Length: 371
Image (cartoon, rainbow, N blue to C red; front, side):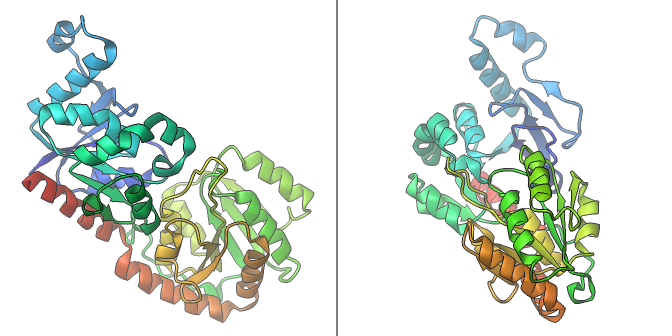
């Protein structure tokens, strides 16, 4: 079995289940590096393993005269060589930049997996964008989660033959029970961080308008983030607190149970003023996998996985009126929700499962190892 390293900035962040799945499901012995774009710790015991610092013992003593960053780079390089690591998967572009000289010195292929903000956001471009051309030149492969991102990376200078498209996929084992939205009450569910790219305030605004056409509708919003309190205040100002429930953060199994009670999934993703952009939201794929129609914006990778008028309904970013009309439409037409939901489950199951993603990602890594 090959030994590979997966590099992430955080050891265990609740919103990064897609990275956790890479660590637990790739068919290799995974050494998990984390704590910074240039990682400071590692574990071989999965995402919840006890962190161990790089550069302990006699190696650290020999490196004392070098600058801190160079000491860390050399310690990571030594670890890669001692543990016969065959490939490094860097989650997010900046991690790829920081690991680039280490992998080059160790002569180990580097695969860089972009996820969203790392390919778009202005501060990322200012800090790391200037080094992306060198990264694209030296990386063995570059992975993007949407067609939109593939084009973005090509525009940034990545050779097209190095770019591989694979969305992170829905966990169809956890999200295996088929939902019957036509039999559910007109409950609409939103799951995700209360962050600028998710624009939960626009989902709320659309729902408040939909209530005028479908007074029995309800909205449940799961997640935390810096916009949560503002959204709670907004719900009160719109006088819709009787129809909206804020659940806070919930665990993955609870998400599945929540979605099974719903008529549809709603998300109003947008590109922010600083150009922050999503990849392909996993929650959208998970909702579809269960058999829920999705009402969302035609943002980034969402049109890759939601077929407008067939598996869900898409609106332009910021078009609150159309989103409101679609919410009301599915609230008042459960049979249509059922038809779209069944089509969504078939579509996601055929093309966008977690296993599809893991298989595609491992094929990319394996080919880089062979080279």
